[in-house]
Length: 376
Image (cartoon, rainbow, N blue to C red; front, side):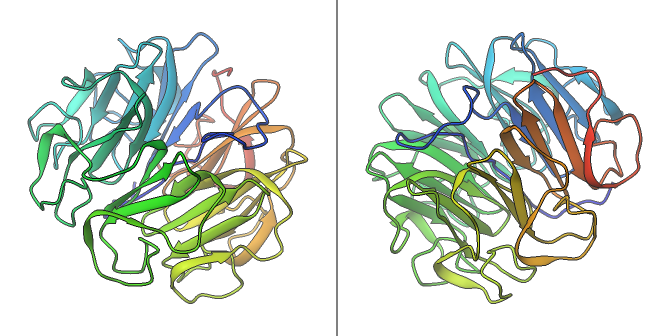
């Protein structure tokens, strides 16, 4: 597969943060990375497929798989997060397990050695939320305290330093948070008051504070209130408010902010022409939303068909995902997107060079294709 220098997605939750019009009971049952995908099945087990050169499938090997396979040792999972080349799962007891690439210490085992199977991160209070960026990971506890670990060259751990940390470190001066998102070299928290704060790298305005200066401590995103979900791509972010409007900021070279332009924005702008949404997801350079009628629309980079509209033309404003209905969850990967539906089906579209669409092939699909062998 193509090696993406960083990434990626954290899909935002359905109804996280309170007040959102929830469309399903599952929260983040999907986690897509640069070239792999994971899902929580109906029994609480985790299955992964796609690229595995760094052990990101968690099956003890480094062999790619175009079909889903179980991650041994992970049970009763209730949330997933996909980083560039690592994955993490949060279980019902609040334990966090990670596996895959570990160059920055993002697995949390105090080493830089890749983990080919799930490793439970020590030193964490029981977690309620999870986010994975390129080379860092963050978890949230019941008190709303965020802790991060891994690479910290741009201050993305939020502890005021630029030192990598294998053990989790507490994000400094962050008010109680309800959810987390992480991207290339930054992280963000949706606070319990409906505002958003971000920290880390800011080359393209992805911290949303009107500047392009990095911050090693959390800073408020300008002009946002009443937010119920937040998601991050590599260097852009999107947030969903209680009225169903979607706001995005940061890099916009491919139209991933959805405002009809390709101009970077250091403060949030509204996604153009989007009907009220109930959930959002972000990929490397694209984003998607689930609408109130359970259909989905996507915008941004589309070179591999990751927008799902049957073309490979990038879009600076939302377009419908062809043939997709009854959506309950979305996750954006490097160059692909996946959705869960109300009947428990899982569909993916876009790049499939490592089998990340899970249909048993390595053929790209510009419209949704069923994943084999997983029922949500």
